[in-house]
Each structure stands twice: as structure tokens, then as C-alpha cells.
Image (cartoon, rainbow, N blue to C red; front, side, top):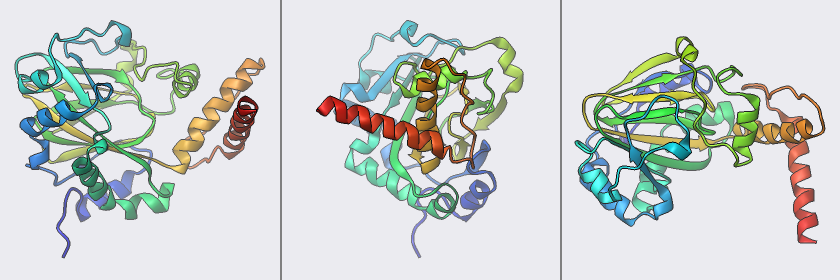
Amino acid sequence: MTDILAFDDASREALTAVYPETPAIIPHRLLDHPMLTLEALAALGARMPARSVEYNSGALPIGVDPAATPGNGLGIEDTIRSIEENGSWMVLKNVEQDPAYAALLSGALAEIVSVIDPVTGAMDKLEAFIFVSSPGAVTPYHFDPEHNILLQIRGRKTMTVFPSDDPELASALAHENFHRGEHHRNLPWQDGFAEKGTAFTLTPGKAIHVPVKAPHWVQNGPEVSISLSVTWRSDWSANEASARLANHYLRKLGLDPKSPGRFPERNMAKAIAHRAYAKAIRTVKRG
């Protein structure tokens, strides 16, 4: 019998009930893994390229301009080793660059392929992110373009997740500019949004499924927190991105295009049109 790494039958059953459009807690078994201790992560941070590590003060409001995010005055290793008292939030991005962490990511996601593939198609662009946070640290309000499961390894945090199809929470322009590389993942926050969110408490052994582009923010608990985010793209998420880009060009023509539909709509017409346009532009530039 194959050893269980992260997701067992109970995990798959819980994920099947909610994937791909509903945020929900699911169990995981990726606890006490030697590659997810503070010491191991300090070593990982030291050997990762600087562009793959983001860290700053964790004393942030829910909504924050990324350009105004304060630093913490420390280096990567020092931030991780002193995370209990330095009041920081940090993420090690694309840890699959490291062969050992690539194996951890692929092994975990292999355990849920039977849930994912029949619904949204084959997993693509597998990526992993590790979050290390001081007590009380805040991850500001933002959205992400991937299918995401965040596994809590150490400590406690509360993630508040919002509907992914509400244009008041994330405007059409924010979506379009994000895919054009002109909008940070952080989103403008209004206090009136709070009543639309659902709070999920994560403790070690619990994970949360976060739908593509569902806005959320995170409040760390009173202990140091370590979380692992395993993510992937799908045909649907790729089509959503292409359709958003098509809308950008339609808007430049003076039109007011309808936002892409949520899953299971495939958004194929706009996606194909945008890919053809992008290919033509690339051909012209090469010529």
C-alpha cells in the first residue's frame, strides 16, 4: 500500500464536494514534515533567488497599497529564524525550483488528480508557495489566478474568503489589468466588504480550498504560522485569463464587454480570439 503524503480518502471526499467553486476546509496529513520546519525553511530561503522571496512587516491593514508596504529591516534567513518576535510576513515563492520541494509538490497533488482532472481537466503549471508569519501578522486583501489549497502546518490563522463573482469586490478592470501585469494581486479594501466574507479557521492538519480569483485576506493567530500553498492552473483558468485580456482590447475599442463566466463556462470564444490576436502581434514583431 502506498504511503499517504498529504491527502487521504477523507481529503478527496471533502474536496470532491466543493471543487472548483466553493471555499471549504479539508483535512490533510502533511504534518511534522522535516522540510517544513523553520530551520529547513531558513536554509531554503538562503538558497532561493532573491526575486522568489517576498517579506515585509506583518503589521498591515486589510487593504494596503503594495508600493507602501513597509520592510522589516532584516535579511531572509534572519527573518525566518527570528519570526517569533520580528513581526513579519513572508512567502517563499515557487519553491518547486528546489528539486526536493518539487517532489513534495508533485507527490501531494498526485493524490488529488482523481478529483481534479475529471472536473477542470489536467493540472498545469504546478507551483508551491510557503508562508511564514509572525504572531498577529496580516496578509492583505488580494486574489490569486490559480486553483489553490493552503495547508496549515504550524500555528493558527483565519482566512476570510469572498465571492469570486462579485464585481464590487474585484472590478473587471482589476482583473484585466492583473492579467496584463499592470495590477498587483492586492485589491482596494472597503469596510463594507466585510459582511460578504466567510471566515475559516485553519489549524495544523486543516487545509482550505480557495477558488480561482476568490478575494481573501488572512489574520495570523497568536503563534508563529507556517503554511504551504499548492496550486495549479486548468483549461478553465487559462480561458478565464485570455477572456479577461480580450475584454481589455474590446474596452479599448469603446465597447463595454461582459465579464467572463465562472466555471463551468469555458469562455472559449473570447479566449480563442485573444490567443489569435496575441499570435498575430508576435508574428508582426518577429517580422
